[in-house]
Image (tube, rainbow, N blue to C red; front, top):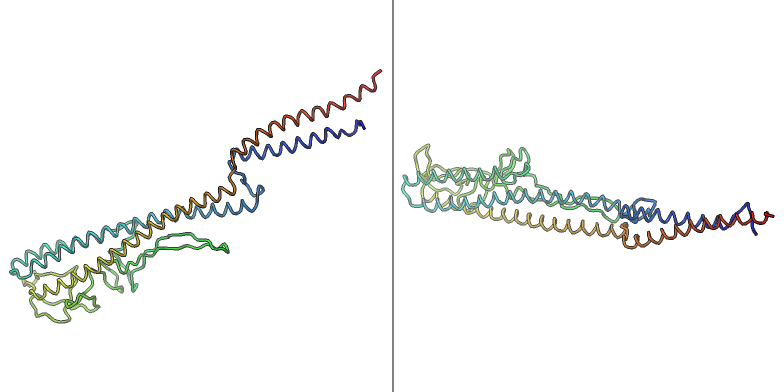
Length: 330
């Protein structure tokens, strides 16, 4: 039935054209943004997951920076520790060479030992990175030196709760000097028994040339083989005790260097893992929300053709109404 009130063909053609136009707008948006899901209205579930994972990835980027900073801190301490080990080996050599020397020779050797001790303190004090020093510390009234905490991971459990993991470096076992009033002294400034080199809380520095006693203590930072105040040299027996103390300190420094090396290795491994994890999350998010540009470009061309055909169909449908006028012509 022909009607001038309702043009069914034109309505159908218009609906088809509108649908094509909507699909074309969606495809053009995907091509311009590169995302299949760029806002919550596209796919609320995927958009929510992608937004959360992108936020976590930004946090992981900060973690990666923190690991880099932590690696620099540990590497600085490790470099200072190695230099200190080389220097304490030289002190050990000087003590060995002074055994059996005359008092005059010991006095000259003492000058060299004092210079090396000063160098040790210089290494420890300068091993600072970004305000952190693990070799020369001041714990104040704390009983022990605080650990250095390096942010190593950002975690999110199955319930959605976020947490932070850290790699802790035990400064108490690596410090060479301690200026705090309550904390135990460091490896080099601690009082050690001359008998076995063990650390003791009770300092009992012997006088130069005195008879060796079981409670005699020495500190690597302050030991000497010649006392300039009394112009007396320490006996060979006392020097033997000092060598025991230096050797014990050297073992502790080697262990401390191992601790720093292990921490550096852990940081490097965690940094590599974090970067790989960030790349994996990027790929996962991309699979959820990225647009397939090959597919979308092909779809765009098809929709453009459909749009042109829809316009033509609508034009034909509208033109069909004009045929009714011919029925009224004489």
